[in-house]
Length: 136
Image (cartoon, rainbow, N blue to C red; front, side, top):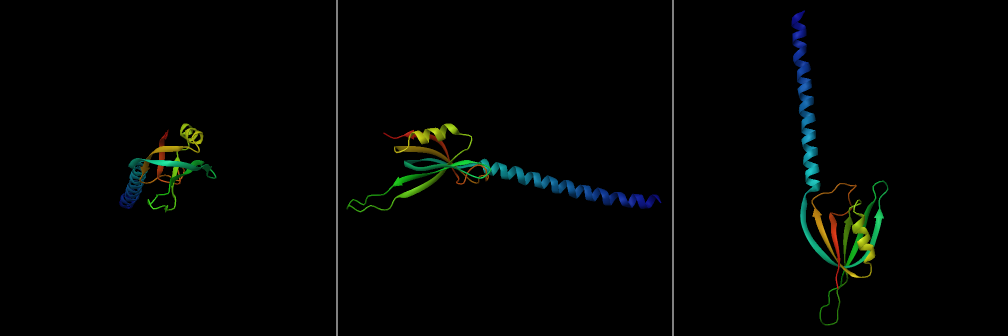
């Protein structure tokens, strides 16, 4: 009888070992994904006039906006169409949102950080605004 219980033990320990390895792999993948989502790909500035800033989302509300970068004059009187740049403001950063709404109709310079990947509750775009400056 002892031989049957000894044979049953390796099966249980194999099952526990596989479960532990699977759990460890899932944790490592999750940590890597979280690290990648917070990683900054680039930083920069864009200058233009804010034409839209709204709060969007059903459960997780985020601030999403559009900046009119303006048309480009060819010098001979022709103007290329305006270019629109979409950006996001982190939902916890109400100071940035207020600064943008107070500078509506003025030329602003938006300092942004581009992330590699963002969580669905952070924003719709990878461009997160960090600072607002009115251009004079």
